[in-house]
Image 1 (cartoon, rainbow, N blue to C red):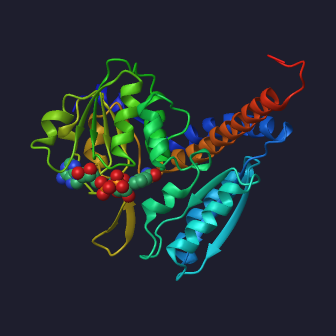
Image 2: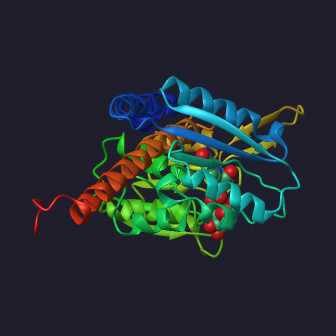
Length: 314
Ligand code: NAD
């Protein structure tokens, strides 16, 4: 590999990128709170709280640092799906709750898709409701699946010009790969989506100015599959055990060989992860704003029909 590329390679620091998003979120929280629309997140844990304790603690700390109230609600391991759906409906109807997060995994009697779909789309801060995924197809990009939004935001920080950019997305899951492809298309990129049925991954990835990998297989993408100078966004999270018995978290890219070729690359951990949490907070604001606009319009419409005779048409 030439020195030029080794010199050029830049690590995309997820914590720094997240800090930039947080700054904007903090300003938006202040503005909403001043006007009486203080955002409040509710975290729903069903069953084993210890399994998700680190995630919840991290979300709580981040939310509270930004001025967003954060409530933890814990439900019994054996709660029925009907009871759980009723609990979500009650949160939907509670005007103090502006966002709902369902922590995964959930017990087997609960269908996660049905539960996620029961959350009102205006309170769907994870962006996983079918309506939220559908909205990005219609180019409404302010609230969408957090990881997909985070990954595309990271690419934007490189300064690469998205219109016409050749991008390959590896992995086509409903909540990561597909939404990434739609977000990129909305930005004008030329997008190729690869998956487990793709015949020759490298033929596609070597053409790309940017590669997104969301598969869940350590070492799937190696340096010789990357075009020199390309941006690599590694979304995979894999727990591996080294020869010495130590466990660690790695992504889907072979970091060492990719680093030598890529223009930019996200580390794992410390890349997409922190930006995903920042996007959760960003979505919280987007959802609270949509609720404010919805109720303001509803009151305006109410005034229209029941207002004084001096009103329009009166
Ligand atoms: P998924 O299991 O739903 O989908 C995996 C995708 O990979 C599928 O589209 C499949 O076709 C494709 N695939 C499988 N083998 C392949 C191969 N050999 N070549 C090409 N494509 C192949 O996974 P997901 O929920 O999208 O998650 C993917 C990874 O991203 C996981 O490691 C997960 O832990 C991680 N993840 C990270 C974050 C984050 O915040 N960083 C969030 C969600 C998921």
